[in-house]
Length: 473
Image 1: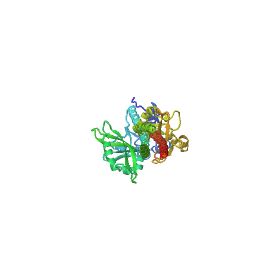
Image 2: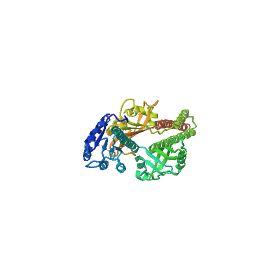
Image 3: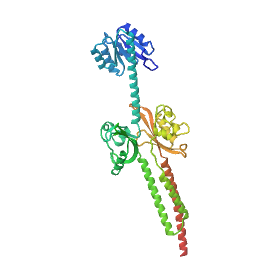
Image 4: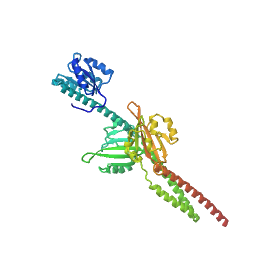
C-alpha cells in the first residue's frame, strides 16, 4: 500500500456525492488505515452549512450533482475558505472540466475508474498531499509573521539596501529615527545626511568589506531632518552574489549620542583636572620648593591615565527575545558568546536570568510581558528610565558582581513585541557592557580627589612660605 507520513491525529475530510452507495464505499476505503475521519453528505448545498459548524482538513466532491455541480460548489467554498484543500473526484474526464476545476482553485482532480482500490489509493495520496501543503503553508506564515514582528519591534535601526542606496527593507525604529514612512522608503534611494568630515571614513569603511571579511562596525555622526546631530554605531554586512559582486548591505545601528556625550563630559573634566595640575606645577616652580609628595602623586596619576587610555570600550549588541510565557524564542550569537551559554541550551526555556543573576528573578523583559511596570522600581530602584527613542520601552543600568572576575556594569533596553492587532506577544531585550565607562568615571573621580588634596597641600605650603618670607623681611 502506498504510504505517506501524516501527523498522529487523523485528517478530517468532508465527502460529498449524490450517490449514497459510493459515499459508503469511499468512507470504508479511506478510513480503513486510520488516517482519515470521513464525514459524508449527499447534498452539495449542505456542505456550506457543515463548514460553518466545524473545521475540516479538506473536501472531496463529485462533479455532477443535482443541486449544485462540483465546480459551482468549489467556487463558493473558495470565496469563504480560500486555503481549504478541495479535490474533485468524479467520473467526468473531459478536458474542459479539468481546466475549469483548476481555474476555480481545485487542489487536485481524481477521475473515478473501474479499479476501486487504485483510485482510492490515489485519492488518499492526493488528500494527504493537499492537507500537508496547507499545514506547511500555515506554519510558514506563522513563522514569518513572528520573525517579522521581532524585527519590526527592535530598538535598533535595521535596514537592507543596494549599493546605490535603494532600500529593500527598513524596520519601524529606523523610520521613526529618520522621519521616514516605510511605504515611501522601500524601493527608493535614501542616504542619511552625513557631516562632510565623516564622508571619507564611511567610504573607507564600506570599501573594507570583502568576502573574507564581510562584517565591520563603525561609529559616526548623522544629521537628522530637524538639523540636529546624533552619534550612531553601525554594524554592516556586505552580501555577495556568486561572482563576488556586492549586491546588498544589511545594517544594524543604534543611537549612541548619550554615551558620546558622557565621554565628552568626562574628557572636559579630565582636561580641567590637568589644567589645575599645570597651575600647581607653576606655583611649585615659583616657590622654588621641592614637593616630593606631589611628584609621586603626579607619577601615579600619569600611570593611571595610561591604564585608563588603554581600556577598549566595546559596544556589542547581545540580545534575546521571549514570548508571553517567558519562554526564550531567540538567543543571538553575541549573547551566547558574551554569556558563555549556547543558544540550544536556552531556546524554549525561561532561564534567561542565568546569564545575569545567581538565582531566579525577573529580567526587565519579564516585567514588560506581564505589564508589571509598577514593579520595575522594586527591581531596579533608581537605575531605570523610559526609553527616549522607543515608545513603551524601558532602559536600566545595574552592576553584576558575579560576572567576570570583578563584576560588570550592563545597560539593558527592553521593548514590547506586538502583533498586527497591537497585542503584546513577547518582549525583546538588548544589553550593552558599559563596564569600561563606569570604570573610567570612578578613576576620574579618584584623580579629581587626589589633585584637589594636592592643591590644598600646595596652598598650605605657599602660605607658610609667604609667612616665613615676611618674617625674614
